[in-house]
Length: 238
Ligand SMILES: Nc1ncnc2c1ncn2[C@@H]1O[C@H](COP(=O)(O)OP(=O)(O)OP(=O)(O)O)[C@@H](O)[C@H]1O
Ligand SMILES: [Mg+2]
Image (tube, rainbow, N blue to C red; front, top):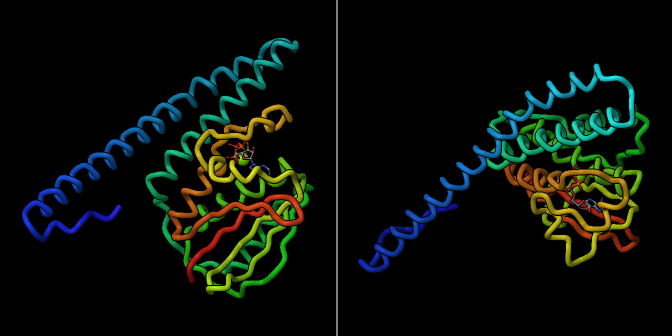
C-alpha cells in the first residue's frame, strides 16, 4: 500500500498522517498473523511426521489405513499453510532470466512423464526476468486443479491485446459458477459440490497462486470458457 502525501492544509496533513499510521499498523498486524500461521503450521510438521512413523509400524488394519490417510491430509494442510503464509509476505526468491518456452516445455514434460494429460500450445519467444519457483508454483496449482476437476489441462502461451504476456491454463471441466469466481481465490474457499466428489483439498491452491502472481508483478484472473470449462489466465507486463 502506498502512503498518502502528508502535505497540504493542516487538517488534511493530520488526517493523512493518521491514515498512514493506521495503514502501517494494519500491515504489521497482518504480517504478524501470517507469521503465527507459518509458525504453527511449521511446528505441526514434526509431530505429524512422528505419528506417520508410528502408524507405519502398526499392524495392517482398516484403522491404520484411515489414520494414515488422515495424517496425509494433515500433512498436506500444514504444507499449504506454510506456503500460503510465505506467499503473503512476498516471495524472497531472487529473480532470474528464463527462456519461457523452455521453462513451460519442461513443466509440461514433467506432467506427461507422470502420465498426466497436459499439453502446451503457442510460443512466446520471450526471455523473462522472473522468480522461476514462484511462477512454477502458480502454474502447478492451476494445472493440478484442471487435472483434479477436469482430468486434463491445456497450457496456451501468447500475448494480450495490450501486449502483456499471457499464459492460460484451460480445461474442459465443469467450470465455476460466475458468482463464485471471485470467492474461490479466497483462502480455504471451496465450491460446495467439490467436497462430495472425492476431490480432497484445502482450498488454498488458488489463494497461493493469486498472491504469487501478484508477487511476480503479474495478475491471475479466472473465467468460464464459452465452450465450458475454466480458463485461468496469468498476465505479466513485459
Ligand atoms: N479448474 C477448475 N474447475 C472447476 N472448479 C475449480 C477449478 N479450479 C478450482 N476450482 C474450484 O475452486 C475451489 C478452490 O480451488 P483451490 O485450488 O484453491 O482449492 P482446492 O483445489 O480445493 O484445494 P488445494 O488446491 O488447496 O489442494 C476448488 O475446491 C474447486 O471447487
Ligand atoms: Mg487446488
